[in-house]
Amino acid sequence: LNDSGCTSLFCATEKIFDQVRKEVLPSTPAVEACMSLDAEKGQPHAFATALDKVTDSTPIIKPTPEDLADLIYTSGTTGKPKGVELVHRNLASNAKSGLLTMADEGNYFLQSDRSLAFLPWAHSFGQTAELWNMIAQGASMGVCRGIPTILEDLDMVKPTVLYSVPTLYKRIYDGVHNKVETSSPIRKAMMKRALEMGHRKADAEKGYRSPLSIGERIQHGILDKLVLSKIRDRFGGRMVKAFSGGAACPVEVIEFMDSVGIPLAEGYGLTETSPIIALSTPERRLAGTVGDVLVGVKVYIMKDGKEVPDGEEGEICCVGPNVMKGYYRNEKATEEVMSIAPDGVSRMFHTGDMGRLDENGFLAVTGRVKEQYKLENGKYVVPTPVEEAITMSRFINQAVLAGANRPHNVALLVPDWDAVRTELEIKGNVSDEDLIND
Image: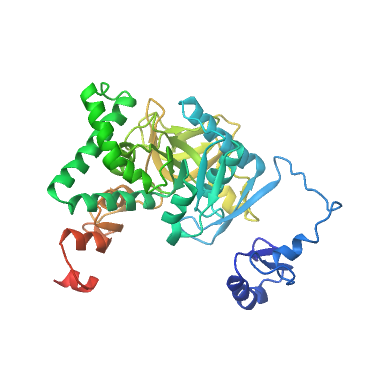
């Protein structure tokens, strides 16, 4: 708050307002107004009271494309949080580029589409995807009341589109597979066959295999009604598109969503790029990559100050109208991540991510530049791909790899205790500690 010079502060609830008033306001002298969104009208700190002061003579702000739209603070991987300055041009161009990239591959948004918004709009992914994308298409959205009620809200809103981080999709994937493994032999076989037929149908529609035979189409239709439609009902029953961002989504989860009949697209990017740089769609996807670079965006793979050929690994660098203006009041930090592109003219942002482009334009992200470390034997290790591979297991929620200057790697793992209990057929109240020790 002090770094941004914020003068107005909006609190979602009275409880948050009281906490902010006592613990935050005394040390933030720049804040002139602090309001609660759910306070009753008539109270001096109520947002509804402030709205009454708006009149026809209140000046209307008409921003230009270069005016500041967002100041989003990001910690990155190290150091003090920095305020990312995103102007209106950044946000508008990223929303437009995403829609154009989807349209180029035959995937369109319609005014009849509806999303359930539960990602935080203080983050660039939720804001660009849910707010600007949906509004730009004239589509609608329902706002989720909170994570505990998300299943109820999905059933109430019945969205056709969902934006989420991989965790939600993986939870549903794990839940279905746990149910499969604990079902009766007949039901287990039927559920596995349904997912198999769904996967075949998805591959056939993408041209990866020959079309389904008449018998297979009939079989898929029956199993879809008995099994797959029940899984889709968990998303509200109308969903036809799903998007994932924030981290890599496991391949088996993507294939599972395809099998169910809800194609999943992945986005890659950072707050500093508004955020999307590349998009993997159901129509154009390659395992191990994050898809195509967006329309209107250019990616260079740089190593030692030079662009490397296709297929070689280096740092992912981005040029385009989506690249931030800079870090707020922090020229030094801005200069550290910005340079002139190989074309000699464009401003280029250094993502800090390692990756490579193939000859067909697919972008693969292989790790973080600063995350790589050297083992005792001199071998370099990029931990991210290993950590992601470990967390593909339905028994593992989180994994952290370490090994700098050591003879070998070690990993810190956080299990999914519910999945472990189900696999071991443990009944009763058994603590996590007892599971480890026994």
